[in-house]
Image (cartoon, rainbow, N blue to C red; front, side, top):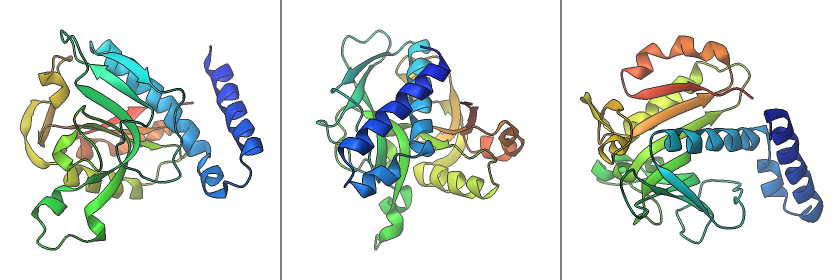
Length: 220
């Protein structure tokens, strides 16, 4: 299926859901172009991991759209991710997950600032509930704005800081599991992407790259 047909099919599914669940206003509000873009980015991540040598299997009947951040539940639809040369899954890929921040781990009195959402995450398969910052192996933020604002950098820089300390470049978690070589200047060595539509957004990438934020242009 080409991209045009894929967009039409996803919109058809959204429209059908609105018809059968018209009272679910909170969830219907979440079915926006942003959620549509998350689907495209999810497909890109699956292809990228496959190209890096990982094998992925979808678990569930259909993706579960969430109106807000949630916890990791193994009963929810997700992807099992098998590293190269492994015989069984040791990773899982979920969408719209809230994690416990690095700041929460060192804070004497945790408060509402200690949890943040990431659109797409890859974690160890033993992870359940709200993952901690050091259980995130890959995090992906999806920005569907036609014109990416500089304020977005503050957001992604903040999430990167809440995932890791700045450190000298070293192999990422996924690299250590046998994937193609990716070094990140982070401890713990999670990978963190900003996926976006706006082709001019790369003009903001130089400084964030020093902190291990990978700018990934994924147009629709």
